Image (cartoon, rainbow, N blue to C red; front, top):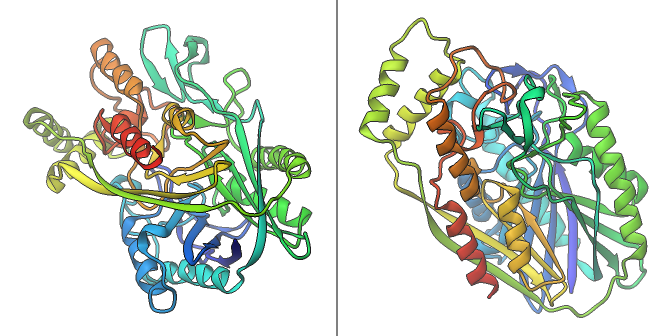
Length: 453
């Protein structure tokens, strides 16, 4: 097997808006550069390209453009290109997808959006040129205390997101946490020198909240590992973390540079431990996977649309209130009038020791854990936010929580909001953040099962 690795800087100019919240944050400096880091695998003439981007999301249009550029010089099918967004909240708008509420008034030069796929394709081309015979090993471990499920059952019976303004009302966490760290070790077969490391961990990269461009904890982890292993390129893949963040309700420190640094340092130490005990071996057969499928989208009823239009006509309601933003989202969904969206799940396996799969959207941890349980591989790596900008993909359980919330307290808040903390609802299942309907979990599990069965 041959593998090549390379990276390209994709840091935007200072002054562009940073995307991830409901308000416009213009960048004022650079904490650390953003990268597109590529890994190209070749086995028996078959190629697969994996890219990790320090960006909030990646659209299918971007992936298609990267494929068109690559086909000029490399014989690689689109189904064998997996582009993953780490989901940093301190990076620029990467393309024209996403809800309008997350972009209104935001500033990004169209030329940056146009040129970004060229840098991604360039990183893949450079990785392709860097191919060499390698050995590969995989190990997994557990790191507790870094990631927490951010959805909580309250005393009033509702399940809401980020209730840090009412910690005393929390009864218990409403979902699981997957604390697994999986490390893929790539060594030069001739010299034994470490050539690459792929790290998979699940936690929302929203630990900073300021106006400095940064890859958040995934970028900081990559930089720390690069310093530890100068000969290697590092890819960080963020796992299913749609309902996971860094905030411990027992000690709800919000944000600050020390938080991602702590996460990155802890994961670096664990990665180093796993690398030391991992033996890189030869001869695993690579199999590639790729399947397109339709996923049902949220539909807006006539009553919902009528109510939304009434809300939007209310000039006294703040435009950044939850009620206004959700009404705006409902109106946008109704205008688009789409019943389904065609997506793709793709990835590769190496013998029975590893399955690596990319899923579209911000996947709930419960879904990711079910995939790991059904997969008949020693190690399963899941990269969410891959190949399409989809929004949240909640579990069936979360949709049930949302229905119960509505029966307890209908409607949404009218105060101004800048982010999802203090949002007083099940944010991930709301029309503001969720494009799919409650059958999404079953659809994705069915597709993954058919791929790996």
